[in-house]
Length: 401
Image 1 (cartoon, rainbow, N blue to C red):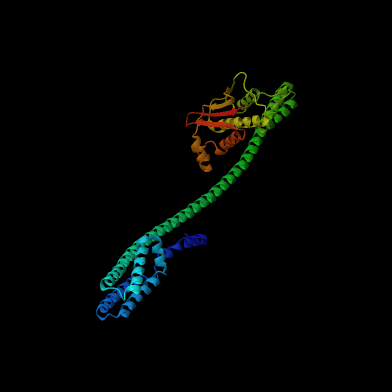
Image 2: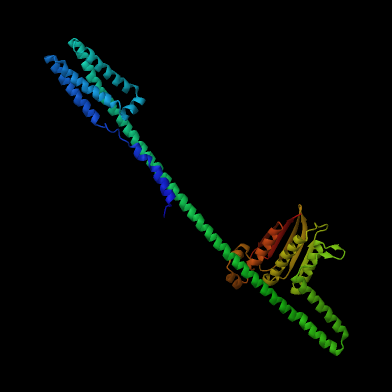
């Protein structure tokens, strides 16, 4: 996986403080301890020589070296850092300065016992200072190491987090692309199904016109030539009924009757009657008294189409001997049930099957079911499909009023 330049810069910036944490106390380091031992040994030797030779200049040179070392160290960053945190460290240097000042001022004329006291105190303080400094630097080194490890772990965790974010982002991006591709395929499949449905409908209309109207007109002509007026009238009436049924299936009935708005009962009752006459399948219609009415013609039209599609599936696929449409009131809603005693199907399985499999098994095309669901969602209705193999089908539609 490639990491973007922005992430690389961010990680580099995060790791920049790490070298600073390992900053040594340059320029002193171990050199300070060596000088303390060296100058302490020299001071001890010069002091012993002074006791025999009584040449104070020898002792002064040794003390001056110690003072130069002390003054130089007090200018260092290491001294400032340690003295800011430790009062004892500052106190040791104050004792050294005090011993050196006394020796310079009084050492030449002081008694041996007094000079010995300050000389020994100076030496002991130097060694104590070295031990104290060493312990503090060891502590700093441990803390520095802990900080380095901690910051390294933080940097590693941040790097892992960034990588995880990038991986998740790439997965989401890939899923989004796959989702778009799937939606595109679904859209193309739906469009193909719509076009195929149009062609199927045209073919059905053509067959119906040929098998009914055309045949009856031909029969009317023959009867008219033979002068059989009564039979001509009957055939003409039948032809008109067939034409009316074909038009009814092509377009929904006029929702406004001569005496006002058509009721829900009259519209669906006529739909059942027309279905039974065309398909020769008994279709009973039941409606509760004082049924909720629908004033919105667009909602009524979509309900009509849903029930019409359900009955079409009964005729084409259910192999039913009987079906029914039931309307009744719910709690602030209108309930419509379309039932049949056919072979049934498995709705979830049918919706997930490829088109070729659905055709070979002669099951309900899922585009018809999806069309019903889409229309129900469009008008805010709930649509449930309850079915099982060899157990018939019930379609329940609930529309809030």
